[in-house]
Image (cartoon, rainbow over all chains, first blue to last red; front, side, top):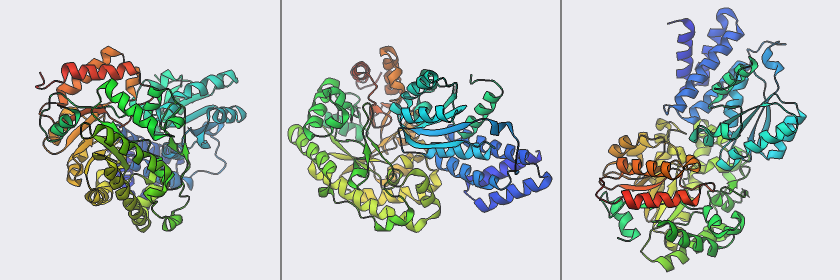
Length: 216
Length: 341
């Protein structure tokens, strides 16, 4: 097994035990080898993707996904190089919860994106269609991630996309949350550009958008 | 058989005349009466009329006095947001910091106007329907309620890192939950549906649940003076079937994502299953798809009793068409008569 694979397994096990101290040691040891931040970022995303997949296939819980994301976000912070020049920082990414104050899903994705080197703007929760559209237009957002909990809010994404286009924005819209999990075609019906099934998937979708791709 | 006999037979793991159906109508009643959701819940008479009308229309085997989950948050003094096409939702969590928990008192049932309306609906329905149809009341579990009280992120912090404050909040919620459940039973509810989505391994891993929510459920349910059903609100149930049965619940609401044959085998003679049509996906169904889904579910889950057909979330979405709900009932009548062929 390659060193990275071993580290992935170690870190995954530690995160699932919600063991911040041990996870910090793994981060430190891994980074100390060659002081390569990109490798550390890669390790983090690999682990969070495995954990996200584990949730999707029913092996892991949402609380484990959340706690893992938060721990990684905290730990990676101190390794981020100063004055980093990265393509990731050129993209304006925002995330918000539509019509709901349940913000766990948003927090998970936010943490994973931060851990993956992105710097998303947090629009908050309980947003109306008008509020999320206005902020996206005003801040010239390139990628908008919308989290929802209930079906009526998920269906309102269609209105968000319409109004964004009317306002001249070509922002890519990535959706997530329970309604999209329970109806796997819903993201297309509301004219979103992609379904971010979990934080790591959302991160990979953003990466593919940067390369000019789209979700199939 | 009347609805009560049908349901009680199924819960006793015997085969009734046909598969019982629970259409879990909450805010859907507003659609039935052509009212806004806010107006609908403003008067107990609206809910009573819609429940009775919809029972007749859809041959529903239960009356469901559930208004919306956030009714308990209103009782605690929190905010509720009404929308035009979905369940009223809790607003910003009213517990702003963990330190605030020590100052919270469980609300008195008889001081809360929204809870009083639910009790009034229960009393009127009981007077009209007697013992012919089960009246199902609802409580949020003490373990799951904090998601609306304090927000999910802070609550996870409590569960994992702040054991004292977690215990304190559980004590408050348990006291409230037991009083609220017993008040509904006194008003005429036949049974209480204990909504506990956090008991599902979809949300909290089983090991943590056994340390926390399981013990809380056992203690809480033992103080509720009537039959209880546990509902995981779309979360998978298979890994915790035995645990939920051990809490004392007679019925378990399972998920559209559970393997039906596997859960049927595990639940046999232990706990009656309730489910598991995907309410979200239902908005896309036509009549043919509906028949297929219902027939398949009956084939896999109904033999030997111990099964009530329902949606998997405990609430029919506003967007589901009446035709689909009528088709569910028709298919049950046609293909859900015992013995199942």
